[in-house]
Length: 75
Image 1 (cartoon, rainbow, N blue to C red):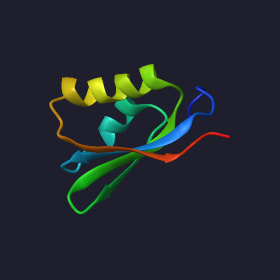
Image 2: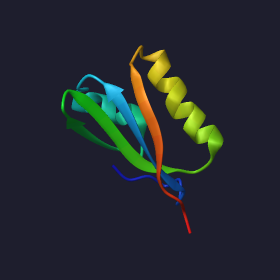
Image 3: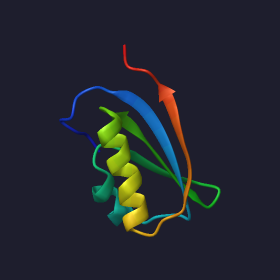
Image 4: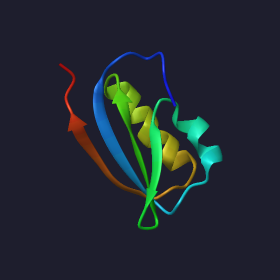
């Protein structure tokens, strides 16, 4: 999935359970992969408000948020 948000820091969010492809549209701009029974979302996050919005979306959907990690800082 691509986004017009621009470059930001790259984050990885790990969610409990394997989400189907239809959930991808709810996390615009994030690459979704499944590994070991979990779903891994990786992609650019423009600012703290954007990150908070992604975390809030997982809570709204009742998903288990296992971890949030900064993978790469933007130049």
